Length: 115
Image 1 (spheres, rainbow, N blue to C red):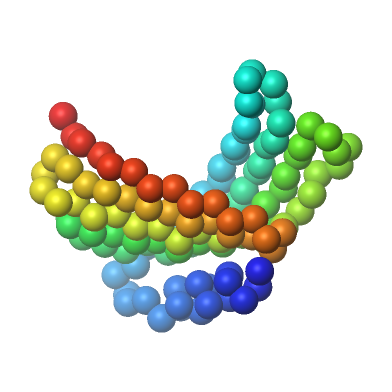
Image 2 (tube, rainbow, N blue to C red):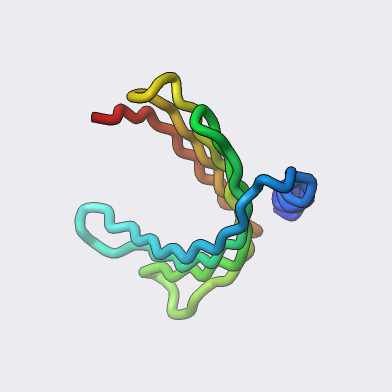
């Protein structure tokens, strides 16, 4: 997993001076059919940059995972790489990839329409 996260972190140090630094604390829960299965707590440190047309961000940090079938939290290191592109004032697309040291990889993408 380090082979995926390390290049992302190194590339973040090469960004221009217009990038914004941020800290993100995130809590996630998964409840298939209404029953608790998985929860995560993430503390991410990252950079973001962009303009009115496109943007991207990169972040990394510790992840604590709780599952319904274990008694202890599992700890890993994870990172995000994401971005968005606006076609016009109303429509756009976005995407995000997450990976961690436990060999978990999650991706999402979507389309937005602003009213």
